[in-house]
Amino acid sequence: MRMIDLIEKKRDGGELTTAEIDWFIRAYTDDKIPDYQASALMMAVYLQGMSRRETVDLTLAIARSGEQLDLHDVAPFVVDKHSSGGVGDKTSLVVLPLVAACGIPVGKMSGRGLGSSGGTLDKMESFNGWHFEMSLPQFKQQLADVALVLSGQTAELAPADGKLYALRDVTGTVASMPLIAASIMSKKLASGADAIVLDVKMGSGAFMPTVEKAQELARIMVDIGNDAGRKTVAIISDMNQPLGHAIGNALEVKEAIDTLHGRGPEGFWAHCLEIAGQMILLAGKAQSLDEAKGLATAVRSNGTAWQKFRDLVRAQGGDVAQADDPSLLPQAAYVEPLLAPQSGTIAAMDTAAIGWACVRLGAGRLVKTDEVDHAVGFVLPAKIGDTYKAGDTIGTIYANDRAKLAEAREGVLAAITWSEEVVRPLPHIYAVVE
Ligand code: URA
Image 1: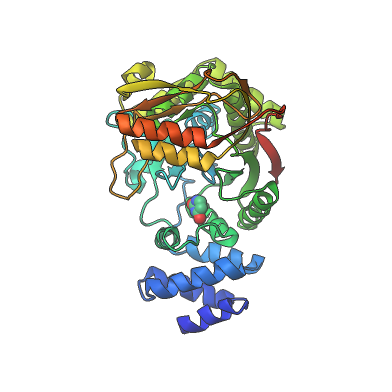
Image 2: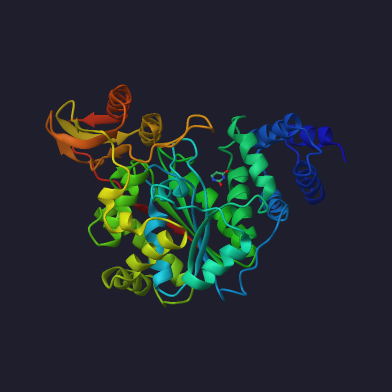
């Protein structure tokens, strides 16, 4: 086969065959296709789209590009979750211990921050000594011993996705529905999950701007998962404002700890309960979503979910004293209130812009080699529909640099739209796709 033929076919709106997609993924993984030709194909897919059959073929080809895990020797049934990315999204830190505490093994591979979205691994690295690098036997051992493990993505798992994602990131081809679906689902299929709950975000801080687009993406991913024999459910959740209050690594860890102790933001807990409930239901531990949510609430109330969180910190080398006393987590030198610039009601938030303001404070990376500052970020309890008077405190900025603090203040305030009218609060969940 010749790469130029595949590029021209897709450029002109044609449908690639299963054999062509398999050949492309194999040859690209083996470094036999140059990045410029792979980029041209990604752009052609971005512009022309892919049929359902092509998307499934692409997903399966990427999943087969490396090792495919089988965890059944250490866990009879493994449940996984995946978020399509968001600002203030520390859901995994709460949900994974809840589910593990219900007796369901959770072996999750997570990522670092990407664009304006934070990453679970960066957040957990707020604990001194916590690490996520481990061999596959170590991953399995911890899954057997603790029933909870959080690692990075290994190079052996879906390597074609690693290469393609890096290429898409710098060629304007990330926000393509078939490419996102194949990227996410190939990793989930390769990592050996029997059941998958997808948290598909929609809104100003997400890849998908509308409920309809998010539902379309969710439908494709759920179908791919179920066709591959994995029980898959997707939740369409809101990202028109940050999730919870805290944005930034150690601040989010503290909020997750508070939530596991029953004193986190209500909306964030409702979101965690929905995701945990769906995971517990898929694992067959409950007959209904209400019953599943009841189990998750019970393991929070009796402290077993909290003990699972501590186990996760300790098992991966983290300092449990910081979990027990979050004031020992990295602390910012400057802590200043964020004041409402005018009286009115919050009508809209540019969530991605708030995420970028946090990245520029140092909580994320502008270039790959940047060091993350775990202490910095925002606590922003202000939500769409809330009314303030000029000068009221709407949040707090945590910074280690005065100039960056001033820039962050401007960035967040510019991202908030005010109105004189009454504005209805937003729902947390828009739909469930089964
Ligand atoms: N997350 C992924 O893993 N891949 C994408 O393409 C987008 C979000």
